[in-house]
Length: 264
Image 1: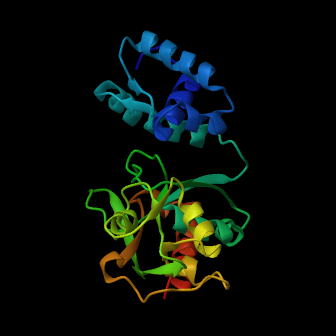
Image 2: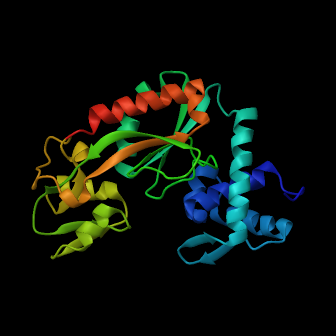
């Protein structure tokens, strides 16, 4: 790796790469979009490589950018171990929006005063092998060598809300694709949380996991379980990281929480 690069350059690169552009990385880095853009241009000059394909909706990584991402992620993991940003071991946990919402509500139990948590709500699968995150909650068993997975059990979905209009969360999740195939008028939203808002208001019908929908007292369920959307959950970690004491305790608490809270 080019000697002119420093850790700050790589840290900013990781933020932009993970968020798919400058706007998403602003909150994580505390820098403005133009400042981040200048840093990315400077990084490309220092490496002599085109790292991004820039377009109106964000930044996509080139092949060279993907190569740097894999290498920089490994360095980030080493740096966090050498120079921790809190007195506790930080454990990064990725899951979909709804599972992240559930885990956040149990954060105190999961952390138990000896773990610093970072929740990463993302529909895409983040790379545990390259330490993008430490623990991932996924809807299918991983097939990569080096990952350990524990099956939690099924997650069910149902229709909630009211009216004849559907809420369509833009994206490629199974529930979004299922709604897209239904006949009738649709309200499009870009964040899953807005689907819940519209369903609670009675403005439209939303497809939600039952562990979310059934937990809202004033939200009416309009269907039984949707068989096409039923899937198992898996808690995934690096085969070596899972033996670290803090990670092991965090894994056990996440598994217990999901088993207790997602049935139904």
